[in-house]
Image (cartoon, rainbow, N blue to C red; front, side, top):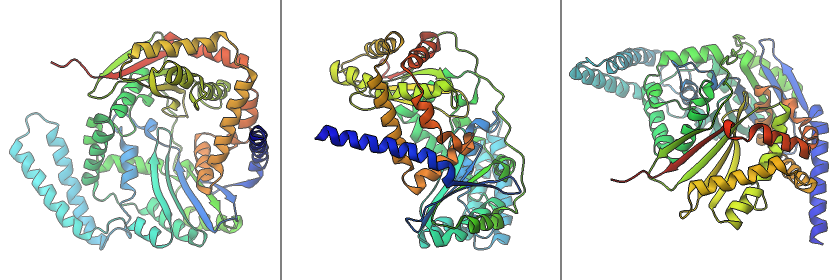
Length: 492
């Protein structure tokens, strides 16, 4: 009886997935504003709420060597308010902001010169501290958040990735115009107040998330080793010296260049009338100047011709990451990798979990993910935590043994079918809520085209056992491999 129920559940998910793919193209209404902004809408009347996402086709991958970390810091700064929100008197505040920036510029210049007089630097720092204290009298903290919360908004947030930056909120349907007014004002009249304070916050965030985090340090080192040329090698937050030298001028330049309609995707999912919403969005966002498209990244990672290894000395339990270069969507091999990675580590019956965790008891956990972005060719990364009594060498050997099986033994049809079902069910769960659907549509549109979702299952179902074996042989070999291990160094 349980088997019958399980089969019915799986069949229901498969039918739901097929129907979803068939209807998604009809459900999504796409509109292009005259200034180039893209508006995606999905009308859902089952709840009087709307998930509102604004994404930009720009992220850390688009930074130059002179501005690494700027996209992430800009995300922080865009929560600081505008000429009307976040201030008690912008006319008076503006004078202080100019003075703060001038002194901050002097400090940044002085600290990078070895012959700077320490007493002069201290004097400038005291002057900046006094100006910042005077400025705080004009600041209204977190006014965006307060207004949204008072009007029923939840989940107000933003995130910066390698390929995109997104701002989001979930709010009652009758507050959609409030959202349009706030977000369009933020794009037209942003004020980057409290810059030097926020820059220090980001420096602390870097220390906490990377320099003091074994996982963060290992991952950052892995990327810097696997990539030699492509900017995917750099951390989204920037390196320590990058953050220290970011300036209000760099923030403004990046914002002015890239946070423009031709690079913007607005995605709304929920309870609204599409025609009325088009008028509303055009009223508030249509007056923005179009801007110019974000230029493509011209750096291309050369073919790796030999294994790369790096060891991170860190006072923590040992960890291991193994990465292989791979193509990104919509390359056919990327669909194959989706199934391959599912077979390797998803669930207790997956190959690596069963072999390394259950049978050999070499690791406490194992996972796999694609990183660090999706616009350009990326990596398949295996992440493992060896047991205290086991060595990374033993774990590696066991991993490679399982990967070799993929190259020499065709997967059974049942194993591939199970992986497809798991992927489909996971995708459907992620798209069930308004916010999940808005996020997914927004991301895929920024990366290329939301219609990637429409035929995804069809492309997945076309993957064969022979395709998986061919991909394993093509990519999962020693010359395409980067290995990063973390362990305690010799004490002494």
